[in-house]
Image 1 (cartoon, helix red, strand yellow):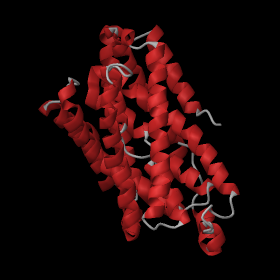
Image 2 (image 1 turned 60 degrees about the vertical axis):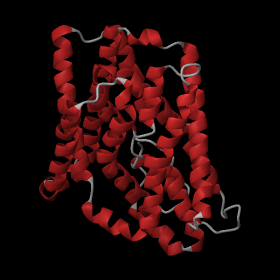
Image 3 (image 1 turned 180 degrees about the vertical axis):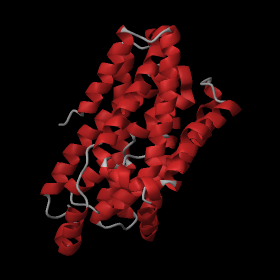
Image 4 (image 1 turned 180 degrees about the horizontal axis):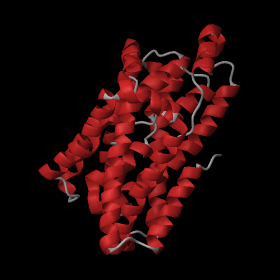
Length: 342
């Protein structure tokens, strides 16, 4: 079962923030750099998103509506249901982070990789992940303001303005400039990928430094962390089961069900961490902890599921896999999209 090297880097960054937190002038510099990094990240997200691919994907609108409903409706409802676990299982601060986790958009890269590994509908996974990320730019802040605004995490009119300036404006600018910068972004996607990850590490360092200075980590005990892991394991199990069998009840074929399961059950660390830094401010360190743990858990579990599905020539209900039933479609998928880590 895979351990994402990037999770190791994130945990190392948390450790550095615990040992050497930014204070005073250094904290101000780190905060300013973090703000600039978040804006640059969302500019790159906008520059990378192919509007043409997104429009082409509208032909399969039932699948995308299903994934969006799982991501921004079912997940938040389960997050709200977990409120009954406070305060005996989850602290109020950890629950706020857990609820925020349920509001984050789906992944793109890992959904594509696992769908490809399981011989599912890869083009659908690409479009579903792109739609989810695009919708998350608007829906995640709005849902967070509606569901978390009463929990003392600092939502106000100024927060809304900050979200628009730091997230939406750079994203729209990236889309508008894609015609001129899209080729450069594509040619240098590996280098810019490192820039992405370094920017997120800076965001994590800044958030956890603020948490250390304020002493909020005294609120988290080993028992609370184990309890959080248990709650997240239940959440992931429910979503994996619901997306697989629910998609079957809705009449989707095997290839589409694979795409729905992997795109509809996962949450994006790359999108969630920068959003949390804007939405939660000084409270971001505890807010991102549930997302970081869930991200690693989903990678490990989905890798096992994808490998098992790749070895099954037929689904258990007797339906042939996409590549077996439609060899041409399977070859186009394999040739057109290479799995990427994420």
